[in-house]
Structure formats: C-alpha cells, structure tokens
Image 1 (cartoon, rainbow, N blue to C red):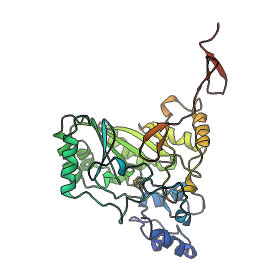
Image 2 (image 1 turned 60 degrees about the vertical axis):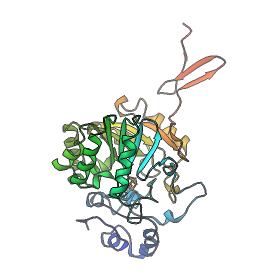
Image 3 (image 1 turned 90 degrees about the vertical axis):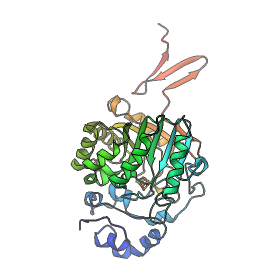
Image 4 (image 1 turned 180 degrees about the vertical axis):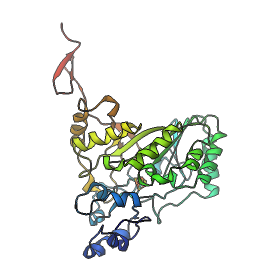
Length: 349
Ligand code: SF4
C-alpha cells in the first residue's frame, strides 16, 4: 500500500488505496485540471481508515475542486500585477520573489498558485529569463531580501541551487535569502549535505520558511531534516494555512505551533486561505479564524504564536487580521486579556 515513489495519477491513487475504484472517474476529471503528487512520506502518513484524514485532505484530489465560486480567481494574490520581468514578483519595496521553478514535490489541493504550478504550469525559468531576473535584482539597490519560491525551490538539484546562490553572492545589496518550501516535511531525505551547502552558497544570511499545516507532518524524519538545517546555521520559520477540516480547531493548531517550536522552527505566518479556484471547501470565515487565533493566546507560549494574515486579493499585499485586543470608546482605551477580561488603559487608579 505504501508508495516508493510519488503518486501522480488517479490509477496510482486507486492502487495505493487512497481513492476507491468507483471514484476514479471523478478524480480523473480533477486530474485533467490540476496537478497531483503525493510524496512517499506523505502517503505513508495517511490513515486509509479515516475518511477525513487531515493529511489525505491536503493532497488527495476531491471532486469539489471543480466547483469554482464567483469570488475565486486564477491569480488570487495578484502575482502577475507585480511582475516586472518573468520569474520576479516585486510587491514590497525591499524584497522580491524569485520564482525559479513551478514544480513541487507534492501538490496541495488548496494551493494559491495552483494555476501556475505542475506539469501544465509555468515550468522552470529559461537561462535567458534567469539572466533578466538577476539583472532586475542587481539593478534595484532597494532589494534587501530575495525570496525563492515557486513552486518549491528545493526540488532543484543542489548544483542548480548553488548556481543561483553564487549569482546572488555577487549582488552586495542583497543581504537575506529566504527559501519557501515543503521539502523538509514531505521529502525529508532530500535535505542532505549537498543541499544544505547549496542553500548557504550565497554567503548571505539564509532563512528557510517551512510550510506545514498539521502536527502529524512533523514526523521524526521531518524533525531530523529541520535539525540538519538549523544546525548548519540556517534560521527556520513556519508558514501554515488555516484550513477547514484540517487544522481549524484549537487543539490541532496548538499542537502544530508547539511542534514547530520544539523543532526550532519559529511560528511566523498563519495564512487565511486564498481565493484560489475550487478551494471553497477549505475556507472558513475571517471571524472564525480570529476566534481560533484568540484562543491560542494564553493557551500556548508566546514563542508559539503565529501572525494571522490575509493576502489581500488583487496584489495589495498582506494584512495582519488577528483579533484586536484594543477597543477605543469615548476617549477611553480598553484592552482585553487572554481570558476575555477587559481593562481600561491606563488604569484610573
Ligand atoms: S508546495 Fe506550495 S506552491 Fe506547491 S502546491 Fe503546495 S502550496 Fe502550492
């Protein structure tokens, strides 16, 4: 039942007992629209007896993906509106995304770039496009940070990654290189000495933002992969998506954030799900998200608190949307504590 290579087709989903044979035609219709990949590590984590298994729900296609809501859009966070040259997104003054590759080791069913990644996606940047992207970074001295994303940049070979890092090393104004990836969780065996050397080859300060959404993803193998990165001097932060039926309960969220901290990964962003096509079954309301995030205060250490954010549709950037602890009324400021108690600030006596 366990796969030794990634599961990529409806037939392989049936063979590995992740889809019932009678459901294969409906899954085939999804496969014709969106990429499928489930790594062996993730396939092994799935409980076939649980119809709502939170790992399966992230990676096994669902016919609901073909239901597109009017508010959904192909480019939900507006990458294209801020792309001055192919492969670069320059939304904020001091940082750019460098999207070198649009391939991933797994394809998440809620992916915000699902129209761009996968075999029918935007592929890998050509050498000419890569030259233009580096010329853009070199020509903009305000760029302090380069964020490699995609797709998952850690699917590139160490040799390709090192080439990219060596080019970045020649651009003095770039001080930070950040990699957004799922690899330490979904393909932990890929995090070896050669990959780590490539991540550090720019000589810049390197950050790895690990994408994981459920505490079960932090397996012993994933934790060991993160330890190899952190021990090599790479700073790790987390990003997760708040997903209905996967992590939208206080116990799961608390366990996820604690698992990150135990793994030396500082919780960073908890994303409200984006308006990607065919993902409405994963979305909850912002009010529901705020209530969950408010519940984390006091329940778990300050080290474990993520920032709840929304990428404003249309490319307007991120907004912090966490619960507001402060209320102003009649010239008076009231602050809520973690139990919901209210306190006037400054106190009158
Ligand atoms: S790894 Fe990231 S880019 Fe790739 S499918 Fe998942 S969410 Fe999308």
